Image 1 (cartoon, rainbow, N blue to C red):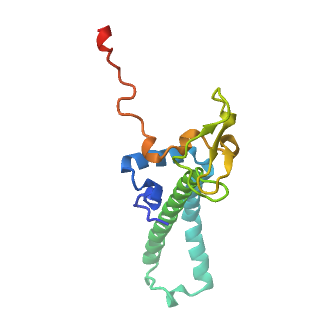
Image 2: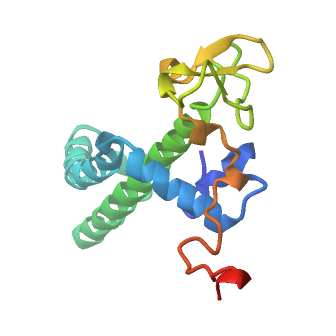
Image 3: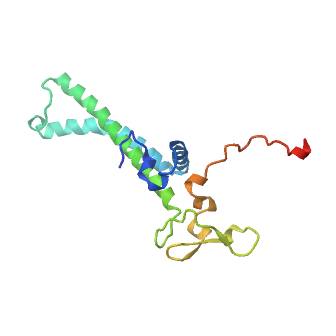
Length: 186
């Protein structure tokens, strides 16, 4: 698990050759493709902890003498301030940790999509082959370089773009710019 203020994509060796901007774009893609439950879980947990944490401490203080094990302030106002500060800190840290774990999980799932289902060898960079002509997506397959099994791309749920190494997925810098006419047409 990473700390909330570090970069999640640096936990994967596949991203070592990429710049931070390319990795951030990939993480944004993962967030867009991620299921909504993973994005709502940290928020719901944080909101729930804001209400549950004070209630649990008050109930626990009636059942167990906490001042024997914890250095609590003697005054009532000091305990209320301490409870308020710990409520905010615990809820925020748990929410940030869950957010990071959900993002790490999403990046891990996206990276593992382009692996062989049998031997888990990375299929990045392996050329896509096709049976026949016509560009039919149902006839495209890939052969694992490690175990030699052949998989139809539609059967394992990946696209040819998923097999392109990360450093080659970037859009060309002149993409969308107006092209100059050839010298014989000017």
